[in-house]
Image 1 (cartoon, rainbow, N blue to C red):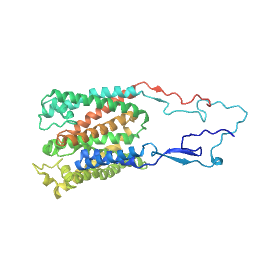
Image 2 (image 1 turned 90 degrees about the vertical axis):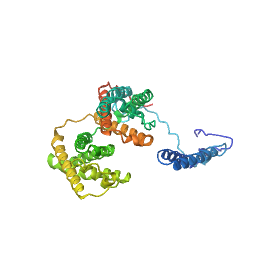
Image 3 (image 1 turned 180 degrees about the vertical axis):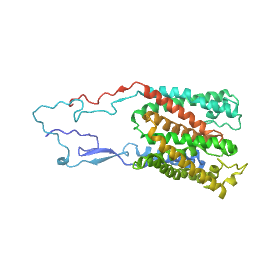
Image 4 (image 1 turned 45 degrees about the vertical axis):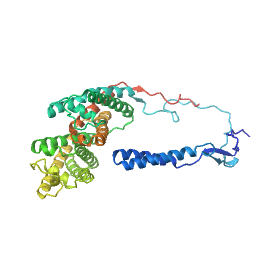
Length: 419
């Protein structure tokens, strides 16, 4: 009989295996961490409860890991049920070669180096401040304004004059900018080879629709109701346009039997219905009600004067009719453009599509969340369409660097020969 090694100890028999004792404390500790982080952003009582739960779980877990308490002995199955060594046989072993079944490959076969993402992050980091600085000069006649807003992501600014140059805020903003560029660029270099191709309708839908719709809405409201423009939560607004583009793309892709223009109009109609959901959820989540986003939409073409927030929360039949007309008209027009232009648009390389979609979502989400906790009032002063344009430039610039970098071949996991 072949000899079977056993893990012996002073209190363990060969017919048992020492195993960690099951415990619930790691899950309780994780819950405590979650509640602590959630409480920092929402309520002090939740943070205190989470910290208390974390402390209790940590003490309980350490106590269970004390000598003699953290392990148990699991009995082994009967000898006849245990794995047996294979019987040897005389013969030759077949040689494996590249491409043969059983040859150990690693996919993908080649990839861009991680350093290309870091370089792309640096290039994007140099280009992306340009729209922000242009906005600062146009809106506030100050290049320091966007710089100070960036520092406001992590530092409470109170009632400071953000148009004035402040050396401390400048150094902090530069540190935040460089750090995020390098970190997101590193993620970019790691993720790019693993991300799948995006179908052309989905890529153009996720990029073209938010840009066009937001540009039209932002420009129209700037001319008709500049005061109303500041009340729009632009990140939520752009999420709605993103949803429209994706849903319209899915509809067009599923309606292959229809000609492009009817398929595009149908996709625009379906996307128009779905895209209203985030706006309604935002109105309910912020306590403004479902009529608030409807009335803001009507403000694109209706000069409402200096209306109060209370007026925007109320139902107005004439504003509802104007909002429905705008929404239906733009949905059908953009759907028509979608169906007409999509067959003529070139495919977008996957890194370019992901760069234009993923980077603005990640960077804007992080910035919006941090500023919403540290400087909630300041978050309302950020011109988010300009902000997202900067992130879009970063993502595309980083993607161009990654796409044009030299690929590195990945060595196979095996040599083509059995071990």
